[in-house]
Image (cartoon, rainbow, N blue to C red; front, top):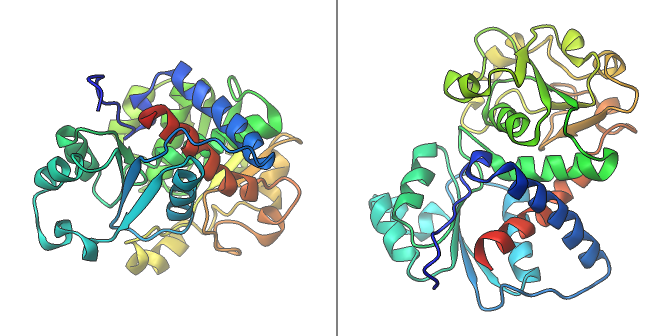
Length: 303
């Protein structure tokens, strides 16, 4: 292992705007290379440990397939597979695992878990989702916008729904990529001040989703109840009933606006079927681009 300082990716704020732009461009290049069946294996003999305390479809498949395509190996670890699930201190697990693998990806609940892991790790740690942030999703989302519409700099995106980890990550993206973010969320579900205060000037909270969508180049939403919030489902359905992305919302946005959703989606709740399955939706490219954007990230951190 080299003596270079270890770089982690716990938040979009861990990289510079230039580095993030480079990653997005590199993701597009790696996608084109894969579509040409070009073999590119810079991570041969390298291992990524993947710790999942929250279940996943897209995150697991994209990281595991990505490591294979880059010539490396990904190791899936659930809480049942490690001493973490039996109460070993995070610091000790980080010290041990980082002596054996070349990078560690963590998908968990408490953001402090990934911060502690990174503090004691000798190798890069990647946040594959916490209750606070989901930065890997934003790499894929920005890459998707760039593919379809060109640079996102100076554009307007509108977030409709809960002020959750995805909303936080979109706010960080507005700061780093230089666009404006409108946030339409019901009172009581605002994003956290610790994320929003440093982003002053990059976002605006507009309670009415149709009003928030006006002049927008991109509409994005997420489920009303995330993992761990299922018991709040009925309460949230009432609170968010006026925050569905439907034809009225899309027609308020610019004619060439695209629709995004990190998936899984609940048609008829946060988005109507005609929107997510319609011509402005780019959700399938967005889902696929998790693979390509994360390959660019793995290459950047590990190679």
